[in-house]
Image: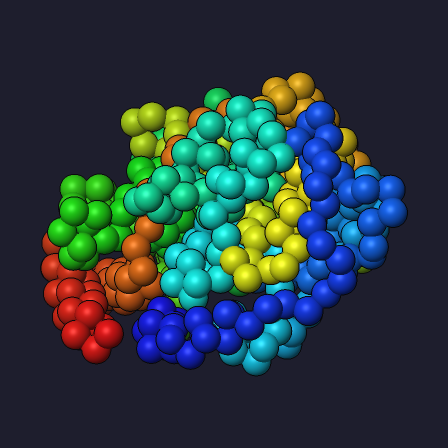
Amino acid sequence: MIPSLIRRSAVLLSVLALPLSGCAGSADREAEQGQPQAKAEAAPVELTFYTYGNTLTNTEFEQFFAAPVRQAHPHITLKRITPPPETTPEELLSSGTLPDLIYTSDGSYTRFTTLGAVEDLNGLVQKHGFDLSRLKPVLTESIRSYSGKGELVALPFSHNLSILYYNKDIFDKFGVPYPPAEGLTWDQALELGKQLTRSEDGIRYIGIDPGGPAQVARSLSLPLIDPQSGRAALQSAGWSKVFSTLKQAYEIPGFVGPEGKFSYDKDTFMKDQTLAMRVSYLANMIGPLEELRKEGRELNWDLAPPPYYEEPKVSGSIHSLLISKHSRHKDEAFAVIATALGDEVQRKAARNGRVPSIHKPELQQEYGADIEVLQGKNLGSVFKVEPRQVTSPSEYDAEAGKWLTKAAEDLALNGTDVNTVLRKAQEGAGKEIEALRRNK
């Protein structure tokens, strides 16, 4: 949580000031494509690699990072740090375990920068001649928005986009047409979901799970904290629109369950198979759907573009690579990033269900080619909606987001109106943030 993060910053910064152990100095030659290259007789270097918040299987780690680096830079070995799942970044760093590379998403940038754990990559980009124009502008511009000083806190490995998953059997059962390939507005998606929310033969079916405030808000890229005033910004017209959409969903007869259930997860979609449509990320569902296929469990499903408002634009999550500010091997760590952003690895990532970060439209044609569960699916849906730039973050986003979650619960279970739940969220978040500021 951000509060504990702030209180412990001084302790953590003192730990981070300790040098990392390791072998050899930085490489001093550069490849034509911006990858630092070692001299022929370079001594071995072991780099530690920490994953936080993102799904990255050991197979993917080997496929996207370890093996390509061994081939391109034989003197560099990547060692993955795998702390217990409940371990926080604060606990990991304060224990003296200081990774060279951090693999995380844009939602965690502020957490790591507050800890003083992130290197500004501008210098390394310039030093090694890395061509940033190869990357999709929406990703680099989004990353730069996380610093008011023009710092480049990360480089993007892939773009985790939102998508609409749907169960074809439920649509067929009730004679409802599938979501169209061109996509749906939120109003249209909810109307479709209304037709599919019903009970039959003792089974309760839910037409659509919109995914909660944060998921719906990706259609508008809304800030939680006003960047000018530093105050919570939860009573804006945009958040009112998001909560009006949620209210429409919650008021569909049968949507809220008899025990107050109003949020439906991937198990409801994949295992129970009683959720007709689910809005979620690509990385959240594709791996589990492939595992389901391997287990021999049948699910007749497909993809459609994610719902949107007036414009067909929805923001995603940026799966990123960061370098530790206190790594003794920043050049070698940058070589790892440059290798991961090379054409070969990015093509491999695309074929395995990751949306590449490099600007190569032809890779869209290969998307998902090596994943069995995606064969025959409407993969064009992944690229139908334009990605939005993410909003500028704040160190108090977690506090504001917590109050939005409470507001959604109040909306769903108590029938409170949109204006009231947002006013209460604004007041609650404001008081909590002010208290945190006083205690800094």
